[in-house]
Length: 86
Image (tube, rainbow, N blue to C red; front, side, top):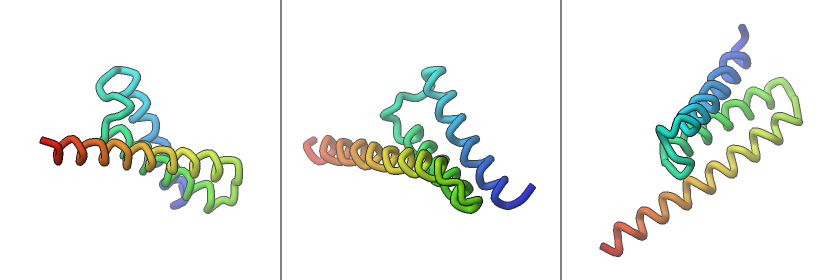
């Protein structure tokens, strides 16, 4: 296996782990851990796709990473607003 294969496998593994934890209701989709798994997993999968120059997955995983990042920022902002209001 090449370095690209390892990067992609780790990324996809993190995405599958996030999906599994969500499906089993161990975490919610607004949980920081879930969003971090999605963000890192999608970023790694996007990197692997970029390394092999495969545009469909670069776009898919890039959008997935951006959406995960935005959701994570919203969750963190909501938490900091809630904590500062107390």
